[in-house]
Image 1: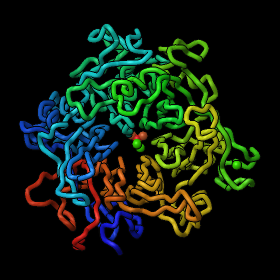
Image 2 (image 1 turned 120 degrees about the horizontal axis):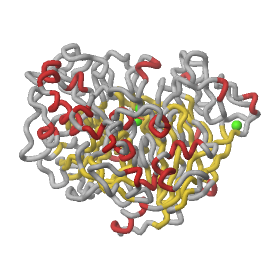
Image 3 (image 1 turned 60 degrees about the vertical axis):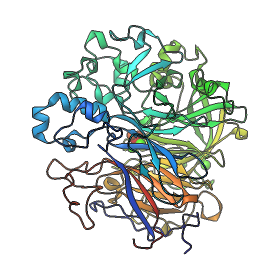
Image 4 (image 1 turned 120 degrees about the vertical axis):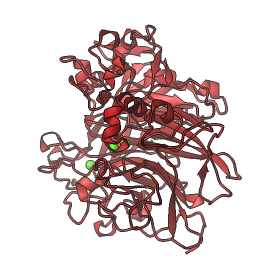
Length: 603
Ligand code: FEO
Ligand code: CA
Ligand code: CA
Ligand code: CA
């Protein structure tokens, strides 16, 4: 086949059994890590040293558990660029030895908080199509962590609901946490979703607002509150600290001195991501899922309009606008949607829907809620307007070529035949919606500011050889790669969809994967597996540079199921066939990986 022709041609790989601790890529491709947890970012960064991990060292090194990723090339020459990467959470049990945890508890907490957040890292290479290296001391290199000051903006900035003893104005928050997926805006900034923030806080019993986002009383697994009292909401000085997390944050990667922002106008929930589409009217539209069982899908439409090249204007677009939540209506006879996943008699799982407004500019549209209450306790507000409970909305991404919006619904073990609907039609005994599904949304008249939309299900995930419910828009089931737990979505230059997974091992027994999914023509619904990640890892942040025959993924939580000294993965420094390379440290290290055409043909 042609080498380096910019088509990213490949033959689908076979699914990989979950215990295989290797990156598996198609024949003719090779892979290398670009950067790993602990790699030094600055001229004065210490080298990674397992037995000397502190807040100070981690603040100058690449963070842990890589999720959202973008790789941006500076110019046509294609020899410089940068990457942006989220660091969602930490796995202390495989980051630190038990002895280190016992003897350095404050360093463990400091390291863990500093290993959260984001990294921005300059890249260089010798020519287009070549693999990238990262630049120590690059101009844009930056770590944003759980300690970095953020400005709060939007209608809830300065609200009493956001004030603490350290921030009596409710305008500055220390840190960002659990940054899952994200998006790059047309004006060059990065949006990052603060997802499962509940896990860091010791809650107060009987507080509805805390319960609704999953914050529970009693000790957390990380015990950060023992070092930093702000993580205990029973401390009256910090009863609002958790309200300061759960937002979409915006970061300007081009200016390492800029203050990142938390945008309250986009609501507070377990934001998986935030992805922007500029509507024909010029308004910026941000789509975001709330990733928990039976939660909702949201969109935000800016009040002001986008102006090409006017970054100062565009960086205010997310400060004011209308926040909507989605209601889905099916169009098939209700009795036909029974949880079996059988295609209804009209031939499709499809229908219409409404974006129900919650806040318009500075006004609440939800009776009984002030605007600040809607934005801080968004789930409670959305509960009152008949929003549709979805099967864990992960990534929500508008296609840059068609404008259609794709929603990854990763799974829902609670879904039962008692409350299936056409948009969430799978509820099998003992599994609910075990493998997840993907919905395609078309805004009415292709106007992304519209309050009405049409939708249809692109695929019901599963291993077709064992699943009764797997469905691929009618594409023959015996010709697809098995797929489960869709999470992140990406598009190549032609508008083809790529789906990475998080949870295949526990559902269909195969390692998490990256799949290409055809959307148009007679192959619509065809799933072809491109790669598999090492043992216990999730595939995150896919970036498809098909014109460069390159794919990038963030390998998150390799070896998560193991323990210190009994690791299930030694990614990415293992030697071929297992074991370790030389004297490299014996722990798995989350990393950003590039997959590229092996023009030498030695892979
Ligand atoms: Fe962090 Fe919803 O995955
Ligand atoms: Ca239908
Ligand atoms: Ca995710
Ligand atoms: Ca996930």
